[in-house]
Image (tube, rainbow, N blue to C red):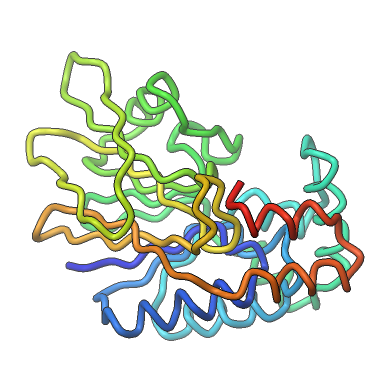
Length: 246
């Protein structure tokens, strides 16, 4: 099975549309939206409505911390994220907010666990960004493969019983193997706000039969998104960081 996984869309219409066009060309068997549909970006309503249509057509969608903040209000966020969450909350209709509120924190299909942050207490929004946090994530579930986002940094952690996990940074558009003798935590990159130094939107294509995952990069008009961010009165840094992928 080939599964396209989109995480951290962050209300970035241009990135979302470019990635969806790439996904349609690839014709995967399943589509998963891994959370943070909103937050930071200037078009939350459009992105929520697009996500609703995808779910109605059979996609799986997971709730992220920015989705949670847009419904219940921000807590413990950076100043820019806090400001953007309050702005986002004011833009959403009751139906859009209800859609985000009803999203599950996890979904499991065929031995693959999908979660926005970590399998360890998903509602606490732990980051999986080092060996220790990957180990804690793996310890919280029996799933052979865990697919998560939240960090915006594409990484694969390989783990064998009794050994410390090993981290690998996958190359763009190059399939990375998933071993039959390992368990894996695959942290996918961000559609709407990449932070690995590459400003191109990123999504993951998981092939369970070939046992590989590819971080697919898709260029888009980030300057247009930055202009919309400024026009909305959101912090300038949220537009600038799209240009540099940080």
